[in-house]
Image 1 (cartoon, protein in one colour):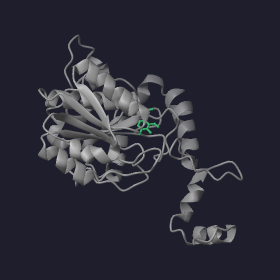
Image 2 (cartoon, helix red, strand yellow):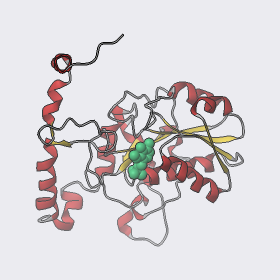
Image 3 (cartoon, helix red, strand yellow):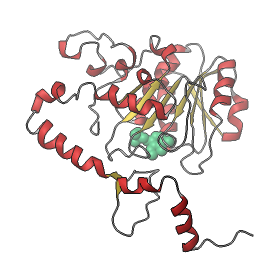
Length: 283
Ligand SMILES: Cc1ncc(COP(=O)(O)O)c(C=O)c1O
């Protein structure tokens, strides 16, 4: 029988923890043991001064000049490039923009276009609700069906009817983790594409998107990446797909030259076309 945990035992484990020094990088109210980083990460100490500078100096003094002088404009690519190594991606495969739900819609619609003729998005029961809601919405709009199965049944159901397998790598309630390489291999063998939601992976678990030949991924910035509550999400598109992707939310920042203010939409190159409209607040 496992002995009941004691305070002394926990303190001993803390003392042996190779990451114990990281505790000092975060502020928490005295006495709080915070185990909700899966919902909203704790505030990193360094953010206080950085946010003050952004608000007081970059916005307050620099005003519109800060788009260039404070590097606001390339922030989605810059921050995406810093997330990339955490998820096993190249810097030019990740952009930070919009929310996870919106990014999921963008990649589902883009992937459905790449598999025109196939009529099914395959998902899982018990996934975080937004994943099912967005998949249902995209399916309705694109005139295909969304089928959600128990997690154990997903792999066997991947066949030639499936356009996209859309799964969350680590489940938000159970912590159950999919075999990313195995599912992706199986989907590709059936001619399908895979979209991975990394909300509970990025910053917490190792993840090797490119080693697994992943196609698309999305994730959020405010959980284990410790962004603020309004922090934008991120989106990954494998290099080999970037020229083929037409995501449907063609906002002005996805334009090749947004400040031309032209009447016609010309998509930016690579991941730039995935930035619909929003400046990352916590960049
Ligand atoms: C797995 C998963 N996907 C998506 C979301 C929602 O993300 P957003 O609010 O950025 O759309 C969450 C939020 O907790 C989540 O846990």
